[in-house]
View 1 (cartoon, rainbow, N blue to C red):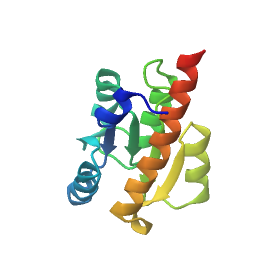
View 2 (cartoon, rainbow, N blue to C red; view 1 turned 180 degrees about the horizontal axis):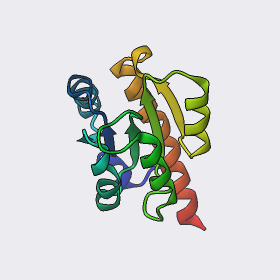
View 3 (cartoon, one colour; view 1 turned 135 degrees about the horizontal axis):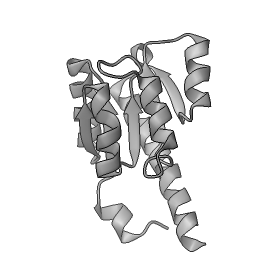
View 4 (cartoon, rainbow, N blue to C red; view 1 turned 45 degrees about the horizontal axis):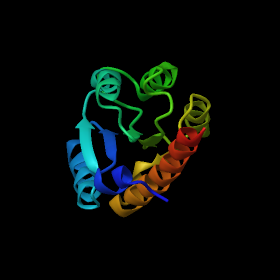
Length: 142
């Protein structure tokens, strides 16, 4: 059973995407689904933002100005404050070696941007936030 905090406070998502049009499209759809969305367009902003705001979920592109998504993912998973936040890679890099590398670094999922709609991104957010919330409640009970 969800506690009152889970029902009243929108889940916080960090969307890391340098394509402004695509970022706006995903942000708009996620916001209308009652998620609180922060968008970062530069790779160099991400780790600091994630530490300051403690997001519930991160959508991360791999090809970014300032710092690669692989570097960011590695830093997020090595950081005590952000290591447990699910990170979904959203990229147009479809090669198997990129997917394997991201998953090995700790990504929760890997999707190809060209193959997903905003509705599917929202579905992924719901899926991972539900799972993440359930796990955080398990830890609180211990």
